[in-house]
Length: 307
Image 1 (cartoon, helix red, strand yellow):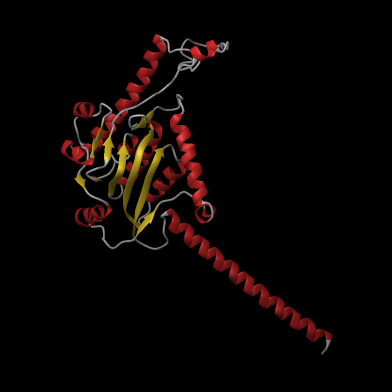
Image 2: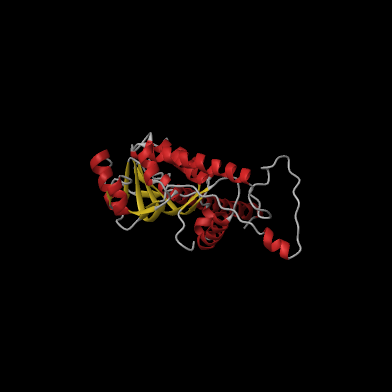
């Protein structure tokens, strides 16, 4: 066999290999893109119902906010189910999620489904929904705002440790763990809490079409069971996600058989390899956030006795 023939055969083998690997690469990219679309809830399949899972401590999530904005403009998403199982979180985190869900509610039906716990900011994020469902035993309500601080100055004194703050004004270091609140500091912080509470009241009054005066009477911080919340007008009905699907079909003409897609901001690697570890880190981080004291935002969270 001549040299030219050998060279021609080698080129053909190389070409077949290149075609094979290029085809395999394209197939892999298509598979990754398909999985990515489905995991984010922005499916390439037409017509579906999106589900937003609100769990654990609620903090500001800019990726999820952007995803909800995109969902509002996605004509394939026919409705949104907000599934809530949360004790609350930061006021700013609850507000940002509330506003993003409200954007979706302007374009398509939204129904909130409360699990075992949907209190404080967890209740707040249900307010833009057109229909709110709870279980009879759901812990919900707890309309209020909390700002905690502490004072370890006595302990520091016993240890012979002193601190000094150089500040531009008398309220700049309030609150401060190293010295008690001053009367002026307490008044200023109470003003912050009161203003955030009034914002919460306005959200509930608008969402439940309720007089703000009545919201304040119900919003003294206490929690209610789902059955109590129903009798007080804080939720619309007792039910679960199946009841939500029924309501969407009967009240909003959303086809009952449509698939439900979960919204997710996790990366492909996190979804595929690191879900368990990612969840553990998330729980620890959110727990640390919930125990911190800062003026970046008060807490709208339900705390059971001893919590």
